[in-house]
Image (tube, rainbow, N blue to C red):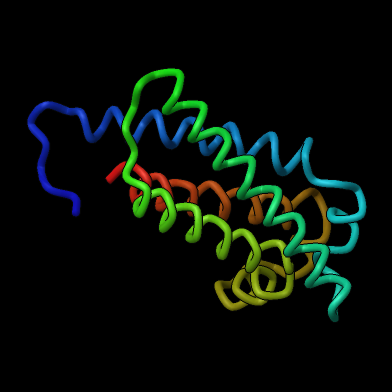
Length: 144
């Protein structure tokens, strides 16, 4: 899957894909996401699950549009299965983080102060760093 590439092409494809996914992330999380989704996606019960699922659907669609635009604009050929796996990794990890409770529990289990998580943007910083880390993994799959 990740065989050495003396030409550097795999690295260039990865870099382009990661940039496209990162740009899509910013647009989808801050522009495409509705206020209702942002307010409700972490709430308990079906209302929260549905709001989060709707956000993840538009988030994933935004990423797919970004990758399609990248491919059309540059002539870059991406493997459909690799893109499907990468977008799935991104979507599932995004849903987990945006439901809030799993990320909060993980942060506390790793020694983060629960009070820090509620002030000064602590939870937002952990949320965004989680997303960016998984975009890195998603880009690896998309760039195969």
